Image (cartoon, rainbow, N blue to C red; front, top):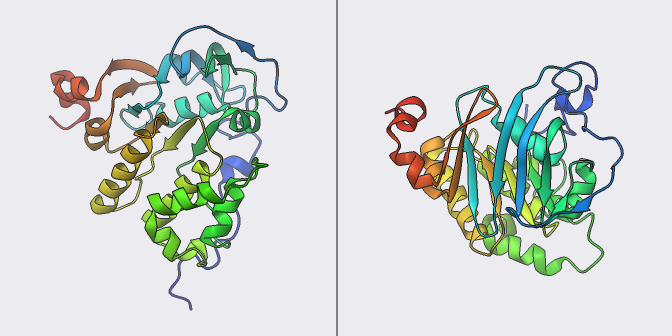
Length: 276
C-alpha cells in the first residue's frame, strides 16, 4: 500500500463536469459561441447585474455585479451557499446568465463558451480537480500553454521564479505534491496562457495558515504586474486584508461592496461575516 494518497487519482473525478443531467451541472452555458461586440468604458472585467442559474434550474444569482480593474485584487466573500463560486462560474460562462452581461477588456463576451473566453484572456483556476495528477509539474505547465503558438519558455521561467518549489519538483508527478504545492501548479498553469485576468476559486481551501499566507503573498506579487485578479475566498478576513475591492454576497445578491479596508471596518460586515 503506497503512502501517496493521490497515486490512483488519475483523471478528473469532478462529477459536476462529467454529469450533464439535471440541475447543478458544470455544463457550459453556451455549447457554441455567439457574437461579441465592443463596449465603451467600465471596469476591465465585469459581470454586470447577472441573474441566472444552472441549466433549467431556478435562479441562484439575482442582479449580482462583480468587477475588477487592472492591477487590482477583487475578492468575493460571504456565507456558505451565498453564490460566490456560482458568480465566478457565471463570469466564466459555466452558468446561464438570463439577464445581465459579462464584459472583458472593452468587449461583451456574454455569448462566448468558456473555451473562447480563455482565448480572449480569462485564466480560471477551479477549486478542485484543477491539475493533472499523473503528469509531472512541468507537463502540467505545458498543458497550460495549449492555446499558445509562440515560445512559452520565458513564461514557464516566470512561473518557476514565482513558485520556486515547482522548479525543484518539475519532474515529479503533480499528484505527489502537498495541497499547497498542487494549488501553485494550478495557478502556474493558468498563468501559462498569458491571461488578461486571473480568476481563482477558493485558492487556499484546505491548506494550512502558513501556506495560505504564502499563496496570498504570491497573489499580491502577480497583481503588482498589472494582472487583475478576481478571487472567491472562504477565509474572508485574510482575503479582505489584501483586497483592493470586496464583494459580500448573500443568497446570490450583492449585500455589501467596498474596498477591502472599508469592509473590514464596517461593523455590520464584521458582525455578520467576520466573527465580530
